Length: 405
Image 1 (cartoon, rainbow, N blue to C red):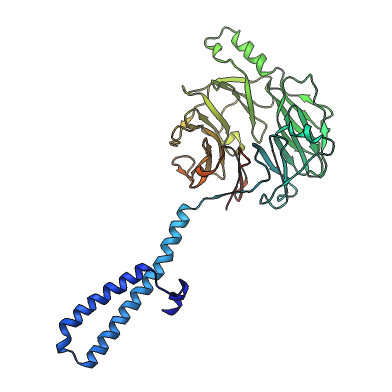
Image 2 (cartoon, one colour):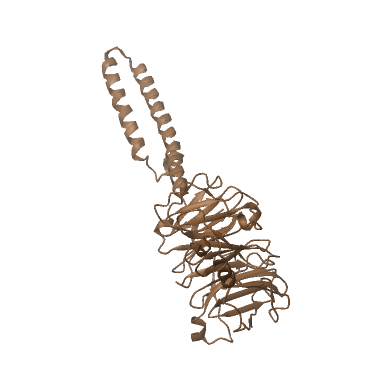
């Protein structure tokens, strides 16, 4: 009994005191009715039994008290914790050096370039010796990618950086002014090798550190759209607008989204041009991506107002027909879904406007809001999982969340 009392600073909690007082009063009534017929020995025995009852009830309640509290805390606890950063800028991308999994880089607006060597717990700002500090602040680093120790970074105004040693030194790679569009994404493929795409839908590959680039697509998206519109095909005028971004899967297949959200396009290695595809919903497209980064597992699409859908596996990139999406019953209250990421085959996360995260443990059949994230002062734009125990959410105002396995 004493050991339990000491656990809560030498006294029973209030609920235990109430139980003890209630039982004591009941016992007094009982004793009052039987006092005349009880001997001193019986009194002693009754008092002993009463103390035993109080002791048992007190210990039982005390055991249950911290258990219930722990269950409540576990239910309200979040699977993400916010990491303190020395910046308050918009964060765009993050990747780890594949030959050193704890060593990573985080990039963003206003020249944000941060390094970690402990798996993302702490981040240190880095600057470039060959860039003027004022000039560096004008850059918006948007994409970073590593393969082994070989890494690439691109940003705006048009800039490209390359490292061969995990980021100990960075080389600035010239970007040709004749390039169709601006570089918007890059994927490291191996030593001195990378694949780059531009805002016009051009796809290039280099195998010599960026000295030479080989085109993979014969015509840009603009040319494809102009040809489609002028082809006389019914409804071809639907495919208008410009492209705001592209998404690549593990095998080199791409998705591209119209800036107006009224259509999307696909491309895979070997095709000469992008294939424009109409959306199958009246709502405009908010975002798209590949399930677990692999087109063979399917595609997800979010629409304005919080809609979300998934295709079946093995979508046909050769067909000109639209993709069929099955709606997922996520209720965001009208907030648009900015990104979706799979942790594994069953668990996935969705980032919405207002700094809200949603979680599903059954491939999107049901959803629940992640507690606490709505209090974060910033929007959440991107979710990245590197394995089942390592994940991050990037947002505005220097917001970085780290997954707690």
